[in-house]
Length: 373
Image (cartoon, rainbow, N blue to C red; front, side):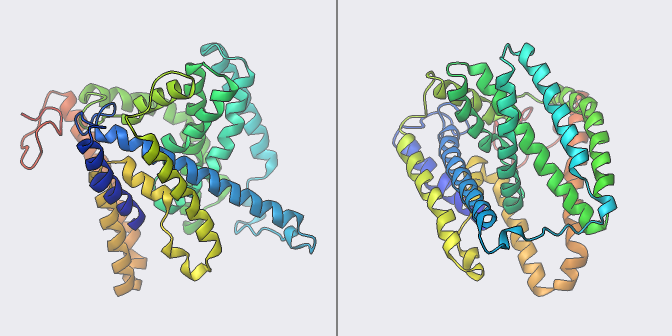
């Protein structure tokens, strides 16, 4: 939470005013093309890419060294807390992965006029991106799939140069893998805390995936009929950034004005942090800010970051002053906030779809919400 706050302060408190004052982001602040928000998105993207690449490299090197260690420590047995009859073995997930990958390739290849090799490469790369997504989600409780999915776009600029559509499809495949990995990590962790069977959760995930094919379409229909998308409530800024980046890495488009030096400097700083953290003892690793969390603080507007920071600080204070009470009620209280906001959002969308507008707009800046006078 503190790292996200640092990213918000640096991004929206320093870099955004500087870019606007210098004329580099002279458009409306929320404009992703000419405004400060679009300018900051490139800086945060550079940080995400640098941190993801370095962190994955260090993790790969660590695993490789343990494997090749001559004293035999690399053969240390991994302990799974689930009983053997509840575990998901490779005999279950490997055939499923092969079938799903084949089906994905068979659908994407003719739909977007791509050679079968290209979707296959995107699927393989999505496995690596999924690891990065799980790491970011575990640190910040946010899954920045649009940011780390850009790694796939960079790869496909080499695999299929000049093909903007293939670049976007590859990014979408990587993002889908990151979303699925992050959701399953949270679900399995919750199930572990409750003592649920991983195998039962796996079956439930398959059933939920089938049901989501219908629910996602229904939700999109509801919200797109109630709100303007993109619009004030749902600006979808990353959609344009995905397209702009696909054009840039394929020889077209352009970066925001004078953003490259700042982005390169931020990326260099972010790349150093994993090395610094690796050299510190475990008791002092907390002092190194998370570059991924800081990038997310830049990536989203402060009205999204500040409530998360408030929640994190509240959690910290509660656990210090009343550890027993926090252990018993923290998850319940937090779940109530999430459930309340989610249900209210559905109710509001249904009311707006029925033609019922806002009753009171006190404290809402002009143009912040659609439908406000």
